[in-house]
Image: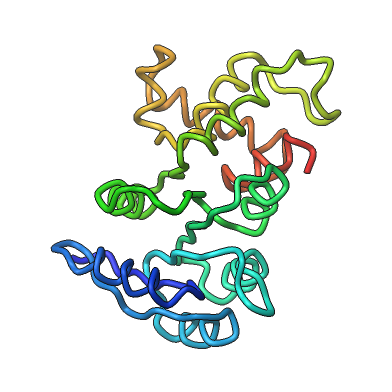
Length: 207
C-alpha cells in the first residue's frame, strides 16, 4: 500500500514542489498546509502515515505543532524538514516527538527514502544533523550531563539508534544477534525511564 504523507510548509512554492516529489508510485500526498493552525485539525482527521513539518511557521512553530500532533495522531510519524541546524532546535524537535530531522534542499530520491525509512521504524537525519548528535557520544564521559549510567555497549547501541539504524541493522554492526540488540535497547529505556529512541536521546543528552 502507498505511504500516505502530509506536508506543513509555509513557503507555497516549496510546498508545491514537495507535492510533486510525492507524485510517485508508493507514495500518496494526502494534504499540504501553510500553517500549524490549518494543519492540526486536518491531520487529526486524515491521520497520515508520515508528516513533513517545517519549523519556521507563522504564529505557532513546527515544534509546537509536532508536540500537539503526538497526542492527537500518535501513529503518525513526523519528520522535521527545515533550514535550521542549531543544536537546540534539533533536540527540541526530538523532544517534541519528531522521529527524523532533515535539511531542505536534499535530492527528491533521498527525501522519499527518508519517508520510507521513518515509516519502517527508522529515524532519518541529514548527514550534518546526524554528525551533530553523534558528536555527543565522542565526548569524554566526564563532560557528559549527569544522568543514568549506561554501559559502554549500551552507549554504542544508543549511538547507532541516534543515527536511525533499525535493530536488525545494529546487530551486524556490533557483532550481536537481533535478540541481544533488543535486550540492550530495553535496558537503555529502563535506565533512562523512557519508551522511544528519541526520548532516550533527549534524556541522555540532558535536554
